[in-house]
Length: 135
Image (cartoon, rainbow, N blue to C red):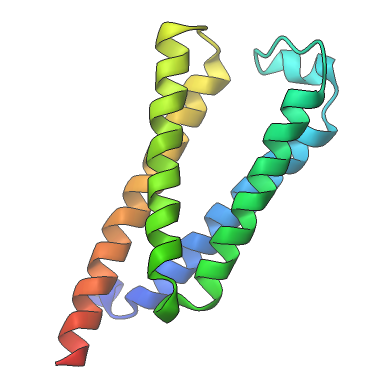
């Protein structure tokens, strides 16, 4: 299949897209006002926690970029990235269903699930291709 002829490029592209997404979310969490965050369903009285969440997203951006830069030596970072996406999915869905029905939390849960699944599928195929190539 042509799609998998350059799986490393596809994996690298996905990691860069996830990094860009994480960076944009992080910056928005830092710079948006309490009123703007309320539009997304968040009741923010103090900006500390949204800013902390923004910084966390930027830290994750660094991990995604490091993985994307050197795919061949980034297995642990990619496993970490996949795990982070699934932990985020679990947290976001749990928070939505058990704590507060914030539409952006549910949407974010589906987004993290999709990114995690795509990353997992592409990485598994990359590892299979790498294994076949090493023979």
